[in-house]
Image (cartoon, rainbow, N blue to C red; front, side):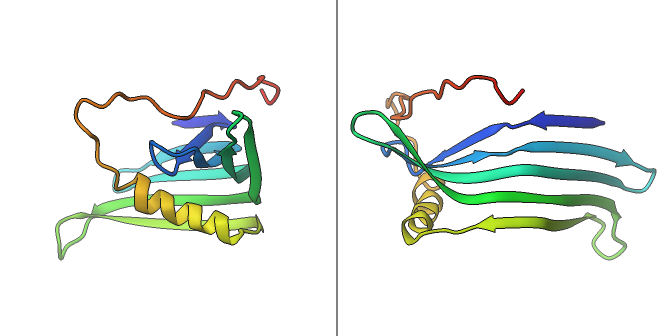
Length: 144
C-alpha cells in the first residue's frame, strides 16, 4: 500500500467558542506499508510541513503568525508478533526529524496549551448546534 498526500491542511481550534487556532499545512506526506508473515511496518516521510497560529479579527480577517517554518522527517511504525511474556502484539515507533526550524512566542505556547486543555476536554452540550466561529477557508489550488 502506498499513499501520497499533497499539502493536507489541519485546523485545531482553541475551543468551539473561540477564533484562535493552530493551522498546519502538513506538506507532502508519503506513507508506505510493508508486510511480512510475522510483522507489519508502516513508513512515513513528510516534507515542507509548517505550523502557524491563526486568529480571526473582529472584521473577519484571518491573521496567521508563523510558528514552525520548516519540518522534514520520517517515521517508522512496526507491529511485531505477540510477545512470549504478554501474548500481546508489540509496537515500535521511530521518528527522525531531519529539519525543524521555528520559534514559538509565549502567546503561541499558551494557545497550544489551551487547545490541549480546552478543546480536547470540551464536552458536547445536548441540543447545541454544531456551528463554529470558523469560516471555511477558500484557497486556490495553486499547490497541486
